[in-house]
Image (cartoon, rainbow, N blue to C red; front, top):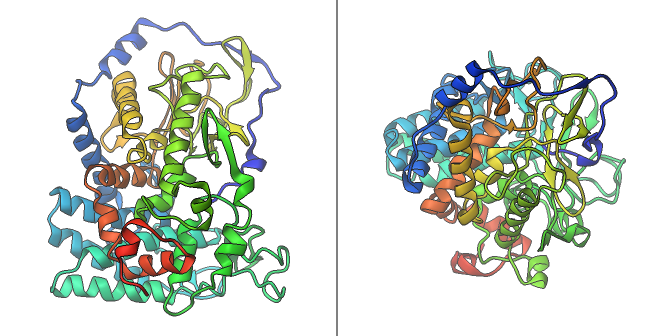
Length: 499
């Protein structure tokens, strides 16, 4: 799940023959016009987007084994992170009336039954996880490890976000809901966080002996992944869950000397906003889906005088300002069309492509993003960057989504809401793209929806509209315990029961 952006820096030049955009034909003009959608009020748009994005999870997630697709409609494998978002989506759908609570509960119960009983073990193949963690991707046919994917600590945490949401949401005196709560507790307490903690004595993993952090992953044929969850990123949820565990908790040093030890190096100013830097927006969003960081602070944020919610707001506003400024002169950027995070892109095609007179190169799937530390930008815009930031800055995020819908119509916004990404600069007729189609007027538009990008749109739109997911999760004793053990105080947390 995590992306090491230094290894994915965007190349600025390609090395072969030049291509230019072909003139727009009358047929293409007619086709683009046919994609227009009727205007909606903000309230109507928010409701339509929520229901369409909910339907992505409800319609596409395998009900026999609860395997939410990593992407759709291509559906090469399931993602456990997408499944965490699906479990959250079911509760949102029940609360919104898209499905009945009993149907959502039954599907959630069946889902948790699968993940509790799915085979665990150290074998190279034939298992779904080990030590309570799960492999990043699972095969669609039986829910076991997909190829040589890693046992992922962060993707397991995103799955657990949905599991613990279900535990707290389904609170009625009912056999199905009671089983949900029991299964959720079993799945969470089975995870051996201590096993995944970097052993500073060097007996477990020796490549980073002084990290103190939780490792990103493990492979049975190769051992530990070379990086840990240290520095500002989406790993906050990993540590909240790891410190909270009633069975295998790590100590506070894991946060203080691991994840948070060097946060100061990530602090900077970008487009007038001073905040912790992380290029793609998913790092500012994922933990916030399930944790209400408004008004609560750890030691670092107390020193800065803000909270992590405000930090994510500033990151959102900085991205929007970058889009309005458009320093690299990509096509289509504006104060209303912006947003960069991990996504598909128009890569896999050869040639030098000129945009506004400058040679450019384009990438496929990668972690795009902008910050004071690094800019990784190939002209690809990602709706979930704004959609997952709606609670942080609704005054700019919702208009951005509405502008994308209005400008790109049914080519971008369709049955399940927004396709994953689009690139208005990539209008090159005849260019082949593995992950999308090229419209000579609108540019490249992705074929697929991505589960880990759909999830934040739905959950964060609901958090903005009603605070629903946050309100449910503030009742979860594991979330409360983890925050308290880290040292968060203030706001709603001061009213929660002490551990």
